[in-house]
Image (cartoon, rainbow, N blue to C red; front, side, top):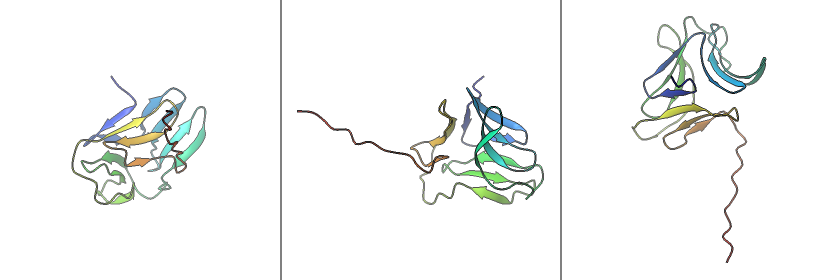
Length: 121
């Protein structure tokens, strides 16, 4: 069973996690979604601690990742607008980044560096 992937329409319930090497992407029982490097170094979090009960994370068919409470209120989302309908996947990579692919529409890293490819002639 793959433990570092969440597909469109799948849900990560409280205390459930994705894991890859030293990293976990966990829906904590206090309703906070967190990216944690072992043993307990929080690298990113949704900031939703204490804002609901029985929360869960869902990835929808527009690539939107959202934390919802037991009343289906959205506590946090990846704030995407206009993403095409399709099949998406959240992957917790071995470098600790949690990334939505389908194309890439969201990442836990706000400082992604892109390097131009230079073709030598």
